[in-house]
Image 1 (cartoon, rainbow, N blue to C red):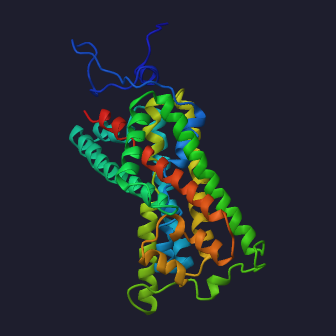
Image 2 (image 1 turned 135 degrees about the horizontal axis):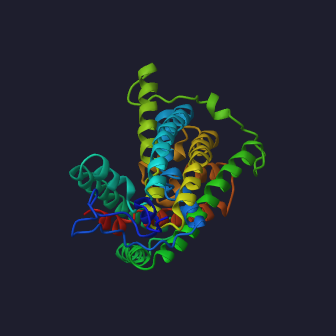
Length: 357
């Protein structure tokens, strides 16, 4: 029996060929990935859970509440999560079969056309490159919640240099940094959901058991742009657009496939956890926002109209201020800062460019 490795086994140990369909009998042999498989299962799990959670889930989601109301926000996030779950299941099958670096880009070149793969790669690169300054700016805005004494240029330079150090050096550093940063985001969203559950039952300084009061007064659906049923439908569309920006797909889990230890065992577990992440973090998060604050709350509206910094525009912080809770808003702002930094760190542009050949 031959001990020579099959092509699929070489993918696991050596990576996937850069030139697909190359005949090994020819003078030119396939070139395999050179990425180091140093990401452990716990790294992959936290990258999968926290890689898509950014400031939008904690701050920008308040704009969706204003536009559409609690019911529209909850329905929009629930429907969009079902779409993402379908895409995730398809991606899980392919990535588990060929766990290579930047798989969804290289799959386009392998199974459709190489030109399509290049186009998909640069399209995703532009998307990621645009989001990095978004998160860098978010870090500056969040810091301004406490003080504006630090120059904007200094904050931006520090954040960008930190991203470069983390992504361009050892993959284990990237895995460790993303693990702890993603863990802080998980702690934040879990803590906010627990806060919502306790506060709605009356565990707050005012002793107010408000429950689902704001779903009845001012109502479940807000009118947007116009009045009547059309206005409520437009509010739902606005919430759906926000959900499509907030809830990302399996892209970030897939990007780690080329650097995962034993990917054919680790990657399926990471993908299977997506359903719990989608349900608990995004669907419950949208539900919690609608429970805590009415969509016509003047403080929330003023925060977005006046571009108040950091957590000041977060519906959770608005709810804490309404209930007279101290200290917690500062803790939430600190964790939102870690969330913004981690989201930018997840946009691994250096690894993405390496996959575009």
